Image (cartoon, rainbow, N blue to C red; front, side, top):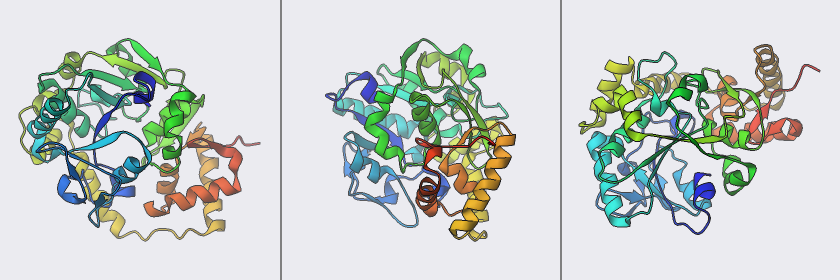
Length: 346
């Protein structure tokens, strides 16, 4: 969406990203490394691209090969296994190889601006690691925050004093190039960003914890933030700048934030092994969805994600697509692409 809005179709973008799809897609806790895939292609010594033909090695899962198949950009793998120094080396190699005209660091939601001690913070590690590395490279990096508050961690009100100027407001036209991807990809923050760009407003319940996220006129906006100021605010990013292993980053996260999100995934993965998934029985699923909608409506919720519904109904992540098809077939009027609308009591 950023690429379409800022650079147009003629620009050739390389998108660096972690392979970290969470447990609904990848049953293995934490981010994947290059060793977790077959079919990756060398771009530089430490950077590999993810072509459509790449595959995660079982039991790992990843959405990256399908993204590479459906989108024209080149996807390259950020590997956090060697800490901030490792990510910095990857960035420096890629910059030297590509000599790019611009480098954007994009965060959806804004928790890249977290101090680290906020009680609502859930997933600071990848943001802090990337911020630390971008502040180390000898090249100009533009930090952008889209959809402040959309990840359900820091509120838009808390983030507002830290944000710089609005550089773009996403529209339905910007969403069009990725519309087909949003039909299957589980990213909740990107899904809400796209929905608000299409005009959806209300309160969306997300994640396994059922966090309420306001969908407002500010949600589809893209802000520029001073990179050095962001680093000055982010205690975890400053602390991990010299790390050489992911274990070190985790240790600092436990000290500063009080937790490691990978520990949370480890614990949840162990719990999920002992929880048999609910069979996708149509009558049972629709009854449970009705019960959830009634309770959510009472909480003031107007929308939710299919990922959250999958969690609420205790349905296996591999059945998310089937759940979506079932609901769209039974109540197509409730689809506020790519979100699910909670109907009024009437």
